[in-house]
Amino acid sequence: MVERLPSDAELDALIEAALAEDVVLPVPRDLHARVCERIQLAALQQRELARFRNALLSGFAASVSIIATLAALVLFTKFDVLLKHGISGGQGLLDSYAATFALSWPYYLEAFALALVLGLGGATVWAGLMPLRWIDAVHGRESRKPVAPGPFQTP
Image (cartoon, rainbow, N blue to C red; front, top):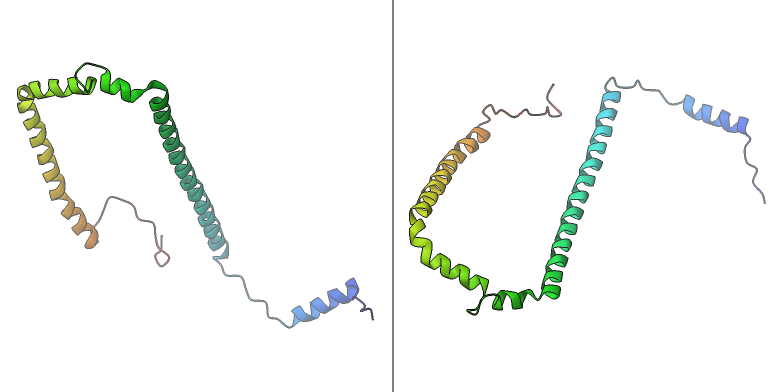
């Protein structure tokens, strides 16, 4: 048994009859703005996804190239032999640097102390200012950064 398909005219009449019963609602005024906002949001998501993927791939490529370079350095230059026997004394160049530092560090003691005092002073000032930023953020005080309007705020 073969079923007969309706012709184009019959099909158009069936569609018109089905659509005639429905009430056509008016389009909201902000429909275009909401659609544009969603399109921009989707484009932003795609752009951020691409940036994230590029950052991960760049980091992976840099890590692999560093590991490959270090492996080539160790394999082809016999770096461990050069490090141990470069200068007589057992550890070569490292032994020379250690002996030089051990003999000369008392002469630079004031410079080391000054660097330590400046570093600790800067860290203390920075740590002292951090609670003020936190209190401003918690209490909703005015900040210098612009804030984008939310869904329930008017721009």
